[in-house]
Image 1 (cartoon, helix red, strand yellow):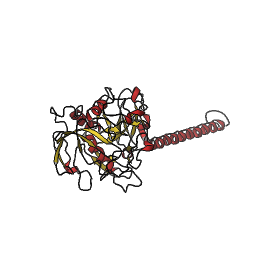
Image 2 (tube, helix red, strand yellow; image 1 turned 90 degrees about the horizontal axis):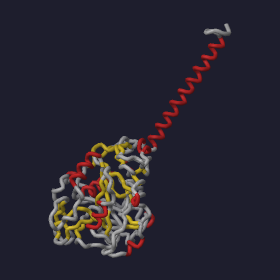
Image 3 (spheres, one colour; image 1 turned 90 degrees about the vertical axis):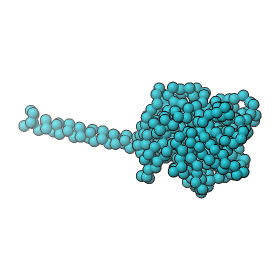
Image 4 (tube, one colour; image 1 turned 180 degrees about the vertical axis):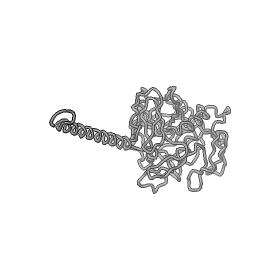
Length: 361
């Protein structure tokens, strides 16, 4: 009765073994559930990107929005979702290491944490009377013209990708390539900050100064005193990686980013609509780091679209001898705003002229 296959001692031991097995299985289930919760809180597979990858990595946030992370970059804020502004940082490209970019989503049914969705169409546009992106008027082809009135009453035509002898140095590296790859990937990246440089003396140099290393690091100095052609050349050559392409901000990238920012304004105090109307007059040039810049002009982890410096783009204008176009805010001019297009000459290079590189996969 005590021993043997059906003995009391044997049955007691079997019961003990079954209890321990059940406890282990329960602990495994709890561990797996905890890991699932932790993974969701930290942005799911966003945590898996380390920057050591040799190819681009397709990941998702906790809402299952797709993000492509370029090879050699890590995710800075894996606990956030697309609506918050997913930030990536260069960890393996030498002089640009530490530079940061923010993902701009493109496509349908992009999910927000409140359960709603929104659509982003890649395109150039004019804005309505309130400064909001007019999606019905989006231009999705580079050759389509946009008319924009100036304060003097002149009507200028703006194009992207239409080259002639006057504007051959204005344009994107390959605007059709940007459009195709961005729509395919479901997004692209813009610099988190206006272009930066590690050299402090750059802010005091003039337009004929030698070009310096461009970065997008939070504590470097704003890269100003630069012409559009110089900005385009520096941006195109910021990266020479077969996995992705760098370029100067184009008008598709600019207007689409404004559309995204208007739909996902995450500021706790957003009474000043710096992304839809005119810029607030700051009268201060933030020359270095985020601490000196206008932190109220930070939406979805992107700084200074509507303040600090005008930013060169690859769009071109029909203005007489004013073929080069810049966008955004200007610390010297309170009427500067992101929806305005400013026509400038080829040699314009002031302390308020800067630029913002983009990358696409």
